[in-house]
Image 1 (spheres, rainbow, N blue to C red):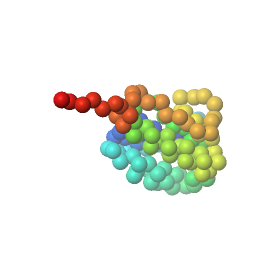
Image 2 (spheres, rainbow, N blue to C red):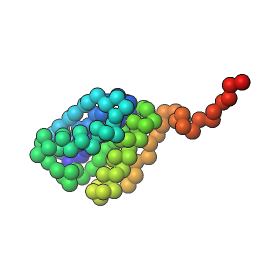
Image 3 (tube, rainbow, N blue to C red):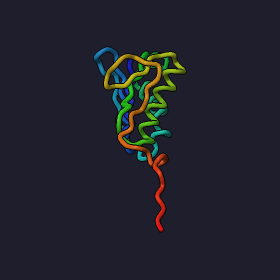
Image 4 (cartoon, rainbow, N blue to C red):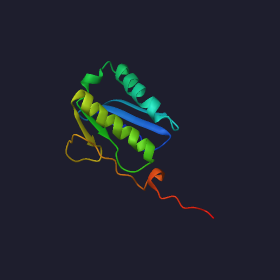
Length: 120
């Protein structure tokens, strides 16, 4: 099974679970600045609706390009954590080889690293 995660928008979590080409479950919920609190419970709830367990997941795909800095990190960190904890493949949903770690590609420099300018 493949778990696909998309948290690139700061107000939505989108995920799906596939087996081959068949989509077993798909969810999209509102999560305005609350993806960190809602993502793992949503994965758990979605797996339960199809009578599957976390160990049934063999690959995690994550949208790792663009979007909000913090929301993007939440999806990527969750995918990488599942990769590590379950010993499964994690990859960018846009394609490419299965890799051990998905690296986020930000659409702009995050505010936290921007140089502050003083106003006189």
